[in-house]
Image (cartoon, rainbow, N blue to C red; front, side):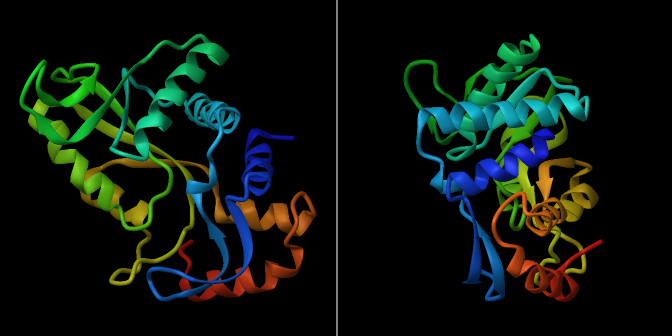
Length: 218
């Protein structure tokens, strides 16, 4: 089993990936739902970090520092950094931002590795719906130093058009900021897993294909 297939089964086991009929924030009616908030144990977090590490290793993503945007990205960047070292012997820095600057002690917005000009940063996030988190964190990073942010790793690429564009959020951030987003899996991987019987939900495959035909990108 590939790490992508293992991750899809992992999402199913954790109740993160479910099938049915769901009204999304966009108002669209989707036959599947991904709730990354359902990861809630130490064992799950440890495994999750390994999948991020696998994705970074497979895609040969070059980085000096893994950055986790507050709040969801903070534990993800930490566990990804730990897993990269434990599994592959790759020792990277990690850092995260505060929502508000600290005005006492060491102060500042960034916790962990203090950023330097030219430093290669990879942003670690759970999912990307609109690209809002990236748009908010990039100015913070650039205010600290002239860092090189060219990559981002997420769990799932829904490959779905935005409400005001023919492009997906992943495609928009590539166009707007030059940031390449690497998903651990895509919705096509999930459809293939359901269709093959790797996970439950084969009966929802026609609805997922129909949803993709209506809202999906290539």
